[in-house]
Length: 67
Image (tube, rainbow, N blue to C red):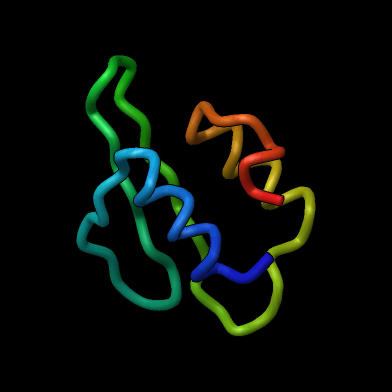
């Protein structure tokens, strides 16, 4: 899965992009609690499966939403 697809899933689930520098983008969701912060490496290659799993855990979503 590409980074832009992961970002699309996060935005659909109520996350907002936060200011970030370099090749990573941060997304935050305050409602409903707890507050969630997710960092996504924005590169051209596919995101590795273990990294995708960590993004799912950080976002509080099921891994199947990212596949």
